[in-house]
Length: 376
Image (cartoon, rainbow, N blue to C red):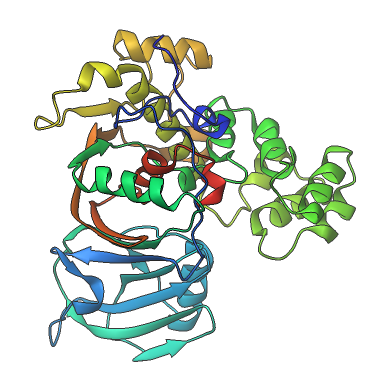
């Protein structure tokens, strides 16, 4: 295995072992005034989502969704109650940020606009065609005591066209990076281990009340743990309620609000990161070709580098197609590199665009070489 050159253990936990920029930079501490200092605008046909113009009629009603400091699934759930219809979306946007994106429903709009403290929706028009999601536009305010060094690194990054297309921290949970660990237990069909990782295993970076709730669960005090979890911990609370009723781990997991598929896809994403890290140095110089990396849903047909990882993980012969859960994942196909577009540096503010499915935190990782909990 190639020498690991990471400064922080979270990188290893989620499979990040290489940087694209080959500079021996020391870690610097950067922070972002969240949510105001981290703005994301969905890009439709290379234009900001808030500039999208709809048609006068069509199959779908399209809304502009603006949210601030609220997670994706909670927001969509609330909007579905308001609109009394299933809401479709193109991508999942950051929680601790100000984000703008398009969502759509079938049929005519029931309301033209709606606003709460955390989100708003506004009807923009109709479409009968698939929205062309070309990427996301980021505007990020960086704060640090190492101002000169940050400026130096920002100037360096402004001349970079490519980065390794790692899947970023928020896909796994930065303060508690376990979504892929839960996914691995689901892949192994170990339902109770999946429950243990969902509710137990407190992390030092979590709030004290949450650590206590997880510890109570591990000691078998389910009702006391349930009483401590805040309402936003919907999955933990729903699964705990089922366990208290005497339901099996398998039955309890099916009561999660977050789709179970989300966790399996997180583990598939972890395998991608680990595989890309393993072959990263061999890929340098092939940026313009931008080879596609494939993590198959059936882990039997794999090349040697991926086979080594599969054996290390102890998942040889398993499949992401789980009949018990009625889940069948597609192969994960993702380019090895992402193209960074339209980089502009304005003092300590950085503006840039990334292709669909790419993560701004990977660019911030290249700049800071530090603890991702400082900037996510």
